Length: 315
Length: 255
Image 1: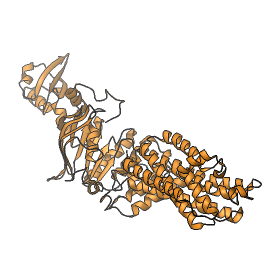
Image 2: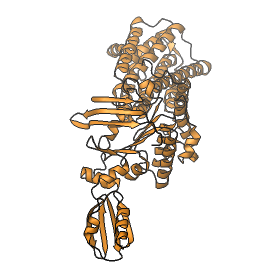
Image 3: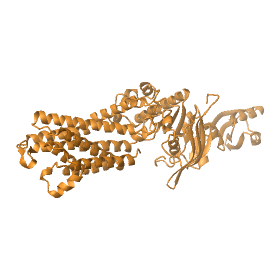
Image 4: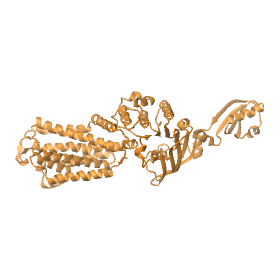
């Protein structure tokens, strides 16, 4: 987050929402700061979409309080909607409208809209402006939907699975646009089950599983929580005893794999190892270091892989 | 809808209307069934020998003149039972109304735009059928113009109300295609598209009087031959307008 003083853009406390007997959202609380990119990460059916639907006024919470820019999404819809841009999963538009006609209509809804052509260029579908919506590929439709979420120059953009179905290049272009949009002060709430996207874009990530937030931290902070968060492998220039490194607070375990030594730990692990060895006249050769990822964090915190239950519609 | 859309530029409704007009032009189901088909039938009925001869059993007017109100009712029926509800149900089914509900423009504006487009198509049908009939096909103008217009306007309000009510209760495009078609043919039967009302047996006439198209055609046919539409038929149409209009407003769901 670049700003020094951040106001709260979104505040959710003790949100609950049932569908019949299914507890879709179970006591979820979080705050999002202005100008933040806030990720909601979790498998399908975790309750991410339901949560953001409550934020935009599409669903009425069973319990709990929500304030978006100080407004209640149920009561103050008229005041809120000019300020919030929304990308819904699986929204479609009439086949026989041209892309430019859809954009032009949506920009007329907002008091201070973005330029539709610039937006289309930035999202890489500028050449499709004159085409009928029905001729667009799935990825292009997805980007039109994202453009419509941003066309009102919203204070808050709520984007549900914005890059699903995009080819790698469009995905990168989209990420760049989101970073630029945040650079102009827009708060962004990103619903995703794309780990890489969350790691790349989000200031903070809420890991959501079975209707609950199981962890909320920066992507780095979440990865750090994983036991054995970092691994360093190297070949020492001469033999040494394990206790030399075991004494370090950063080190958790040491394993010898033939010549190679694998150290698992946290913090400034590589520095600590190199420094300690050097003090003893030993060089660490061929160093390989890898950190735990968000994905590791998710697996460890939920006991499941995030893509395990794909195929069911997200709620 | 209290103060919804109070900050919204007025241009927004214009843009909605513009795009709905483009769709009505590019997917001309409404123009085809609401304008083209009745116009074609009008020409066909005029060409059949003997249809333009005054008949004593029809109160001294011709079969062709008697059919004209049925064709006007056909125009309005197509638009209100098939075209209008199908568009609205599709917009709901595909999430277009839901998407609008998170913009400053309420989804009711899209519904309003659809009503405007279909009313305009109906009006165009009225004008084109009347001009073609009178100028080229020997149609007599209604002898009671005021009564004719009253019956026609109530036809429009009652049939649109029924159509909107269908859009409120029917959830899928597939269902409206079936239901709309069924209702369309049943009601047009009572309106006399196949058997002119004056030739219907008394039982059918009595049922017909209570249907919107029966009442509509009865009112317009009486005006063709000079009298003001009967009060019961106008009341039946007014009742359909109010009752179905209320049900539509009460039960319409945006998602």
